[in-house]
Image 1 (cartoon, rainbow, N blue to C red):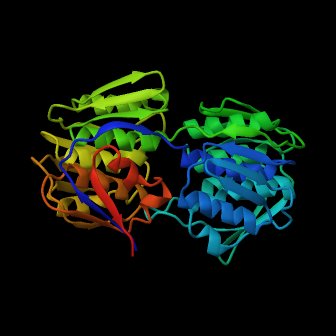
Image 2: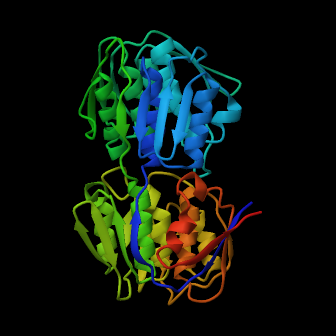
Image 3: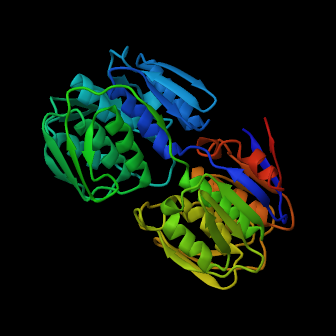
Length: 417
């Protein structure tokens, strides 16, 4: 397995271009199953998760082509609505194909998903919602078997799950009648999905609010669409700039997607300014500890919690992080403590007592965002060498991160095995 080697203590300076959002591109790829003609996606990131979804669609019979950031998807040849365990287990987002397959074929057999080990993340809300739309659900040897002609219905989500909201929007877009989802998730990626589907001919209103109304249509056509920029990648680079006392500008970002995060970053003492679609962080002074609580959008994103923990580890004072979205998402804390951090866990709360500096050490990534936090910690550490192992996690969500950080002045490289 590859290892990322870091000698920290260097301020990051310069500009970095964002890639398209992984968490937007994956449901868009799944939604192409609903189209009666080919779709084209622009600004698609080159990530392992994208390749996994591409492989799954191809396995089902789709014809895909991915060149640079340009992807064509022709799902019209799909005849078998079956997603096997060997493909779905590698990535949780593969489960997104369930709703479109049922909507198009009236049946589907999809393996229960895998993905990062950050909690159980059950799919019960997805399945309850599909049942409300008239689908019969059976679990058999690790597979979800769904059958039925979908009809519009009212459904209230037990929790504003992003995945369940997206699954039900896709399924309802070709259901008969009107579907009304309440307590829906509000993330920008959901708005992007709705924009894509509406361009295909769907009738979706209210995406981005907690109430979404979908009027089903009999067919959808293929369209071209540009994936929104990755807000989590933007936050990760901004934190890296701040923790190294650097001056970093993230290009092609959307400030409106990062309001809660930017508020907390400013509270640490970092100077943050926006100019059009660019966001700049300049952190000349020492950073201050803050308290934060992860919440569904528009609250502080759970996907930036681990990265902020790395920042708070070497900030002045004591800070706390309360994780309310996923259980078992403090797995990076023990590795940060190996680097000299002083982090104490109590249930779903982490107490971080800032230390003057972190020290390089061998550490092991446990999931995608934890791996990003360890890279950030390594960049901040003025002494020693940081070896981040299991970096296949980071390759799931960050495209060539070591090359892009090196372009900002970091002493970072990948050692391939």
